[in-house]
Amino acid sequence: MERFGSLTGARVLGIAAIALMIVAAPRLASAQTPTPPAAQTPPPDPLKFATNAPTIIGWQVKADKTKDFEEFWVGLRALIAKSENAELRAFGETLTKMSRIDQPPFAVGENQAVIYLMHIDVASTAYSYRPDLILYTYLGAGVEGSKLTRAEADPLYKKLTDGFLGVNPIWRLIKIG
Image (cartoon, rainbow, N blue to C red):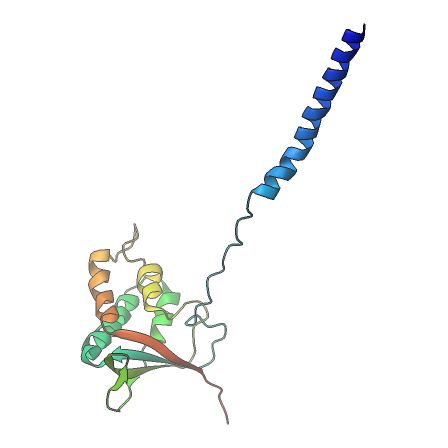
């Protein structure tokens, strides 16, 4: 009978050990498994405005690529004007006041640059002024069902990117008087 008692004790001990492993296993697993980092929020788009206040955007462009930069905006506005989306066409109207600052080119890194100013009387709160978003997202270049193909959009976008140095500054204006 002792032998039977010791087997029973062994069984009880075994069952207790298994129960302990079942209870402790999730805790051990969570202690050993690293927690994934929190999803990083992309930085806010500086060319997407929360208010429709008048705004001036400064575009830095390589001095030898000004013609391409100007052709990009003319082409982009023409594509927007052909859009069937009335809201997008209204947005396109905010892109029409562009001027180049009348000053000699200045050094930006190893490049000579000029500044273009886009004056927006009533800024869009629905659309970003980022040229890549306008061309590839809002106009849907290359997206199935879009009338604009990548073969048409990419050469136009290259005109911008070959001479683009940066966006700086962005001035939000306050009307007075």
